[in-house]
Amino acid sequence: GKRAFIAGVADDNGYGWAIAKSLAAAGAEIIVGTWVPALNIFESSLRRGKFDESRVLPDGSLMEITKVYPMDAVYDSPDDVPEDVKSNKRYAGSSKWTVKELVESVKQDFGSIDILVHSLANGPEVTKPLLETSRNGYLAAISASSYSFVSLLKEFVSIMNPGGASISLTYIASERIIPGYGGGMSSAKAALETFISSFPMFPCLIQVLAFEAGRKHKIRVNTISAGPLRSRAAKAIGF
Ligand code: NAD
Image 1 (cartoon, rainbow, N blue to C red):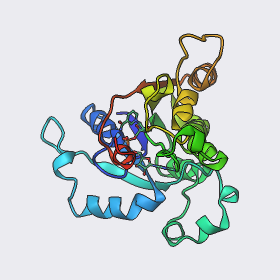
Image 2: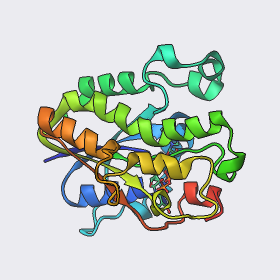
Image 3: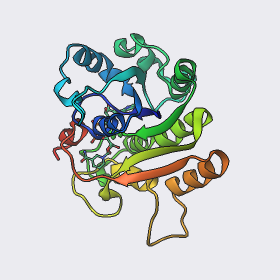
């Protein structure tokens, strides 16, 4: 069977959970990466059976998550982590949650994966229109929502089996005005996308990644523009 790592699962309401279920139903082994600040509540809810109803697969069995890894996709290695985050008690309670350490742990535990799903985004100033967004807020949105995929793929590619696949989730706000999707999130999604159909000469992130990962490693790189879903992230911006 295939082994899938799904980055960005912290409850049973989002796309990450739904994708995990589809992959589990198709016979894949599921491992997930959960944002450090959300880890405790996710793990304890899982343990207490809070998600059991939504774990039910079409054949009646329950989706098993083989392992939950703490992660924060805005940090590549421990050197990148600022003091205030390091000493934050939610972060200090877990370890090895930077991207490089995470992939090293997955490698030690499982050796390889076949599928990488990037289902995470974060824009600290998402509720602000672009003209009121700070440079830091804008760059944080790009870092968490766009570069996080480059970073994960870059590290995971070395333990992905040939013929493997990676996927991320984007949103229509990259190409059309969606009021309320601010803080640089629309730009972050544009940077993440597969193609800019009207400007084919501008290679964007997914094309470049697909070219590089495909040529070097025989890994597919795609993004799906998902419809609106009332996930935790969507509720936070009043969608
Ligand atoms: P969600 O809240 O279920 O998922 C987002 C996840 O990102 C959360 O689990 C959160 O803990 C995690 N996260 C945030 N910052 C992180 C970080 N620095 N490191 C690691 N994890 C971090 O919400 P969702 O809406 O299912 O989002 C999943 C993906 O789908 C996102 O890329 C989102 O932009 C995209 N999407 C959502 C919609 C929608 O309407 N909900 C539409 C199109 C695309």
